[in-house]
Image (cartoon, rainbow, N blue to C red; front, side, top):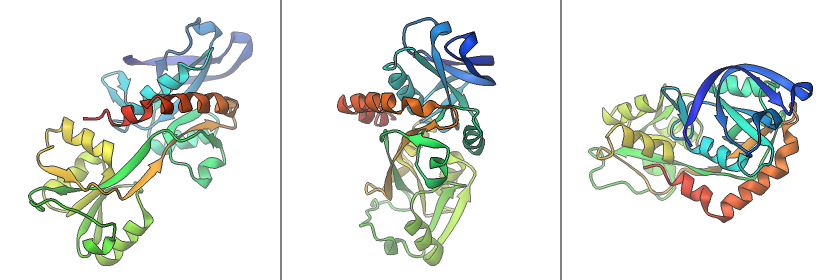
Length: 267
């Protein structure tokens, strides 16, 4: 399903007399149960623009986590959903303040637990090292010991997190340089400003595919870390009432192998 961004006032709830909130935002409408919109409960989610998990392409929205939400919502009778693409910090802040019913799958931490409940695990998101093939023409293997990379410079995106032990090791025995986004990060690697970069495996695969640079780069098979992501559902908005429904839908998709199929669908 191709999702279209639309602007305007979006009313949430089952009817005008049972309206919970009104949002003025650009949102992606996701079809849910096949009943009229006037009778639907609409759950409002937000996320950052983060290909291939969520992206906005000339007014159309798509991505792995948006598709996952579509498939989960399709299992909930009388429920539809919207997704608003926002800067990451703003998405979290406005969800904490009760502007949204939840956030697309993200990593659980104590701060986020203060204003959301979390579903069962969805995607197992792997962080990996990428390298320039010209820098390591024979390939690169890694046992898991960061000492093997002593003296090397690592590139990471501003604000990203992969593994605290990795960051400590490179800070003590090498160097860490930060980039503003994934394109800048791979440019640093291409021009050998860094020896390695650390990023999400699916994000790296997507970037090297769309940029036509797959032949320039490769990633180390052994992951730095694997983190499970979960939908966050707002306590303030009462969306935590749908926790069991989300978990049942996620369990069904996992049993069908659909979660793995989606995550591995990036080129």
